[in-house]
Image (cartoon, rainbow, N blue to C red; front, side):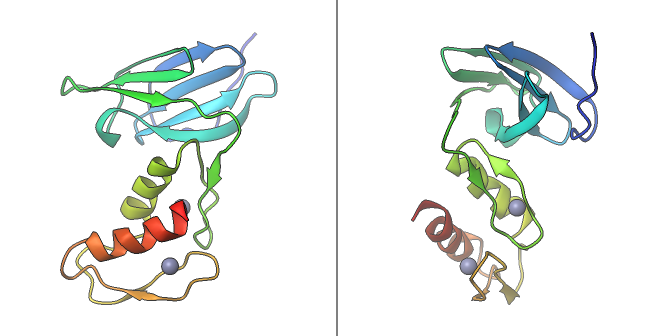
Length: 146
Ligand SMILES: [Zn+2]
Ligand SMILES: [Zn+2]
């Protein structure tokens, strides 16, 4: 029996089966968590150092990932409180909130920019990253963690 998970962008470096879940790490730096029963994408995670994952195993509800710089990071598997990105036009769902923050900061926040609009649902604030990402990060933390 075989099937194709089509959401992954690029080469898959490692896959791992854990109970009813399947994890795959891809060149786009996302770890994708699927349900094995229906092959549906359940949530995204990041691996060690938020970079390319070269090794991965899942045990005791923890994803253990390693990268080519020798960094190993342990990430909790979250089964029920997944968190969806609320940016306009984005529907990425993350397993844990710190990973949603990393995604928002790298994919929705423009670095070194005097003024840009926050497009988080219900927010139209103007942000600046001219002096660094701290102000924008505090703003996004407010959206995600409160
Ligand atoms: Zn997003
Ligand atoms: Zn905002």
